[in-house]
Structure formats: structure tokens, C-alpha cells
Length: 307
Ligand code: ADP
Ligand code: MG
Image 1 (cartoon, helix red, strand yellow):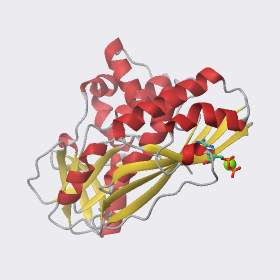
Image 2 (cartoon, protein in one colour; image 1 turned 180 degrees about the horizontal axis):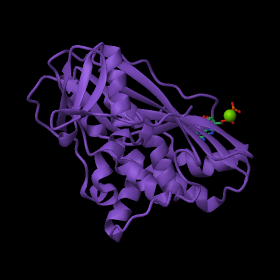
Image 3 (cartoon, helix red, strand yellow; image 1 turned 120 degrees about the horizontal axis):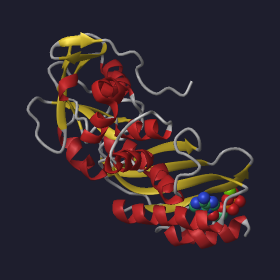
């Protein structure tokens, strides 16, 4: 199959309004009034962000969700995406069918559609770039720079599970029950960004970031952008039972420095209640520190870094 046959067979069925069924050079979005448009892009690479042996449907969903996570953290509702593919020569029709199925399932779940993209073949590893577009009311984007002294710090979901799944693939020794192992690997393969929470978030958050490189590292970005000190109270960080079973007494330090969570960390007024957990506070100063029962503990490695 050539490039155009491949696009027509696997991707045209995913095309949304304005994409001309992927038969033209561009997509056309009629000008919208009132809302702001947010745009973000993320690339995932075989051997770095996923494994070549992962099911193609989960690779597709991860590629899409890591971009939806950025939009959600900013308070935007996702609408469309572009898909850039560098495919190894060895890719099969079955692989592509699974990949398209994964995208179709997430398009339905999140209400997004495909606008277009680019397809190439490579001798290198499989690479997938997703550029996602989302909308929110004018002026309502939640920045990293809005944290105020006196704010409390909150996080959605639980932290570190994806890192736990990766550790299992890297053959860290463990004696986990099958169900725990499966649930950690599922989180690594398919993150669950709180996309539906975005519109509520923009009414309560002062500053927000998606947790992709590790909770401490990403809150560090908020601290620097806002010119404040963020204290993360370790005993309050949500850690799942399977993760505790995997990492034991190291769970907290491992979890807050693991990457790939795709949850949202944000600051806002004290006393907020919702689908998130209070984990700390904002003080005068600069940077981020981790405490356990009031005592500061050293964080050896801040988070995932590509370079
Ligand atoms: P060009 O020759 O200008 O690079 P292409 O032949 O790459 O254009 O693309 C033809 C059409 O197919 C365009 O509408 C493009 O957006 C779409 N397309 C190509 N690759 C993908 C992909 N991976 N996902 C979605 N749409 C794609
Ligand atoms: Mg092209």
C-alpha cells in the first residue's frame, strides 16, 4: 500500500469537519468568535516513551493523550488534532488497523477529530507527533505563573503509577500480584489525563501544569514562573496501593520524581474540594521542596530529563 492508500484506509475515517476527508492540502477551520484557541504539540518515540512491543492501539492513545493533557492543564476543552507519523518499514496492516482503532476510541471518548497530518517512512524508531487544538473562553487560560503566597497545592489522580509500570518493564525485581502488575503497566501505556475536569479547573486554579516530567520537577516550573516557594507535603501525595506494593518505603521519592503521569498539579485558594487531593502550600521564596511530617527531605533527582 502506498502513502495515499494508507491515509485513505486508516485515517480518512477519523477525519473531522474541515478536514475534507484528508483529500486536500490543508484543513479549514472557520474563524470562531469569543473563544481563545490553544495549540500544543508533543512527540512520542519508540524506546523513549513507549516500547515497540506495546499494542499499537495503546501507542496511539498515549500519543493523543499526552497532548490532551497539556490542554486540560490550561483549562481548555480539546477539539481537533494533527498527526505526524514516522513509520518504520516493518509496519504491517494489522499494526495500522490497531493504531487507527486506538485513535477512534479516544476520539469518541474525548470528542476530538483528526484534521490532517503527515506520513513518512524511517529507518529509525517509530515516532508519533500530535498537535492538539482546544478552546476555552477568552482570557481564561490558566498559566504557570499565577501561584500566590497562601495558595494551597492540589493534584488530580494519583502519582507515579506510570513510572511503576515502566520499572516493571525494566525488570525491577518485584513480587506483585498479577492484578497490580497489570494496572501499573496499563497506566504506563495509556495515561488518563483529567480532560473533563478542565472546564471546572479554570474557575478555581491560580496556576496549573500537567505532570509529565515528575511532580516535583513540574511544580518547580510553577514555582519559578510564579516567583514563589512550593512545599509538597509528602504524606498527602496520593499513591496507589499497587505502587506502594511495588516500591515499599521508596514509593514517595520514586513517585514524585517519575515521569509520564499526565495528571494536573495546580494551586488555588485553601479549602478546595473536588476530584483532586490537597498536597501542599505556597510560601514566599523560590523553588520547590518536599517534606515528610514537617521535615524537609532531600530529593535526589528532580524528574525526567531528555538531555
Ligand atoms: P503533502 O504532499 O502536501 O505533504 P500529504 O500527501 O502528506 O500532503 O497529505 C495528503 C493529505 O493527507 C493531507 O490532507 C494530510 O493532512 C493528510 N495526511 C497525511 N498524513 C496523515 C496522517 N498521518 N494523519 C492524518 N492525515 C494525514
Ligand atoms: Mg505530507
